[in-house]
Length: 139
Image (cartoon, rainbow, N blue to C red; front, side, top):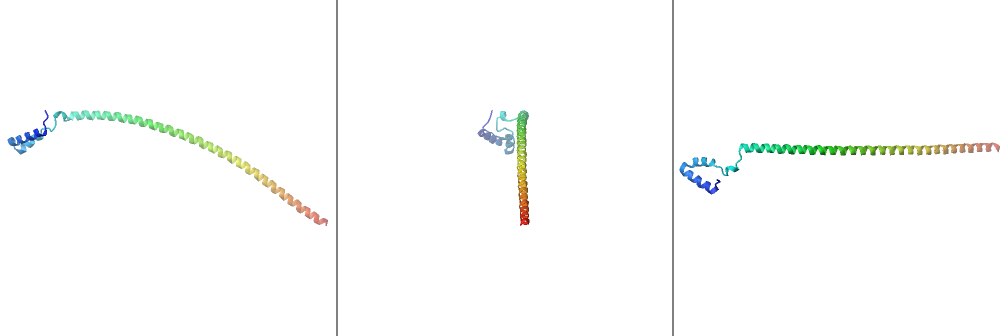
């Protein structure tokens, strides 16, 4: 049976009359302010602790599984990204090689044209000078 605050106060005053203030306070300190059913025992606390451990173990196990799954997904995504980057790098390298070859071929053609034009110009100049010299001897 639970007692309310008014009843506790009334009992405390009566005990003070019978036992004195100090003994009444000591005795009232031993009376629970709530029903005994609401007070947890050490056995209750041990059971609660064990249940909490089981719950925590279960939650940690689920968290580990989820993290393992997420890490695997991230790893897989990184592998795909790495493969894409490697493919794109190779394609870029092949394009650059093709452009380098094409540029070299154009430069070679232009150099050949330049050399031929220069040789033709030098030959023309030599012939012109030779003609002038020949014409100068005739007169």
